[in-house]
Amino acid sequence: MESKTIREVLLEDACIKVVDGINVAPIPPLNITFGLGANAEYFGHKKWGKQYLDAVHRDQEFIDRWNEATGPWDNKIVVDIGCGPGNVFASLGGKPKLLIGVDISFGALKMAKNLGYTPLLADAQDLPLRSGFADIVVINATLHHVDDMKAVLSEAARLVKPGGILVTDQDTQLSAMNFKGLGYQMWIIRYLIYRFTKRGGHASAYEQRCAIAGEVHQVCGDGVTNDLYHSVLEQQDFDVKIYPHNNTLGTEVFKGNMGRANFKYRLAQRLSGMNPSDSSSALSLMCVAHKKPTKKKITKRFEATQAKSLSII
Image 1 (cartoon, rainbow, N blue to C red):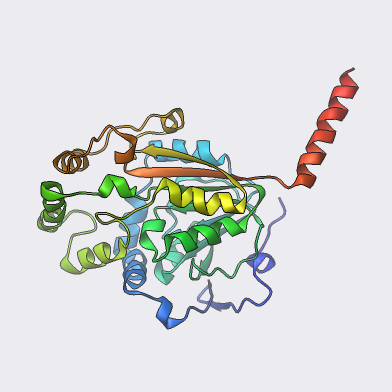
Image 2 (cartoon, rainbow, N blue to C red):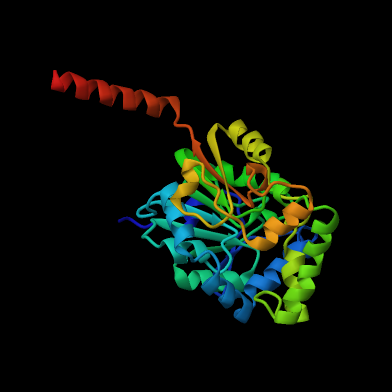
């Protein structure tokens, strides 16, 4: 398998420095908002980042769901936007031709590099990568951490080559978190319980502050929507399919099964007058979007099919 380097897929005018083995693109200070700073701190922390890598998105259901969505990564060019310490590749594995991990956290990228990622510290809203080169673009549990979800999704889509695929998952659906009244009060109180029980991500006051501040869009009345994916991706010539689910199932989600959410979510939804069994209450929207092939590729496929048919005759 012929390897590929990140230099081959950078924009011509990209100004990249290598710092301690990490490719670093310049980011204007004003673009580093409070939420992004909190994410950089949390996922780059040696202890917290390692705990996240070991425990999150490592279950078999996640692995089965993603393997079905993307297929093998072997000999593919893959870009993982918001890769953190490297959870997706750590779970799926494979031998990509080039695996670029993009993140805002230097510490997280150092962990990802140890797993096999080519690390790139960059603003996901303005990537220094050329258009249309990636076979697979991954955005897992990332959109709710960024400032402008639409801009990041659009940039990710720009990287996908014709015939390639963009997959997003694990970002909370807006309508599932639209808590009100007692449901809202319960949702806020849970932070005190997490802090008291030293739950992962909340073991200390500082860790909890970083974790909460980084959840930019995972708050009541915010999150991803079907319209977000369709409006952005269809404009860039993608076929878009959305699968609502509750993070508990594998390939069953592609058959229309949502699974059952954790009790705390169902209780908060019930107290808010919502129906936990409705698709609008599903916690996550998995988006599987295929970039349409160019007309040239379609013509070649047709000619190959015709030739095969003629040979049979």
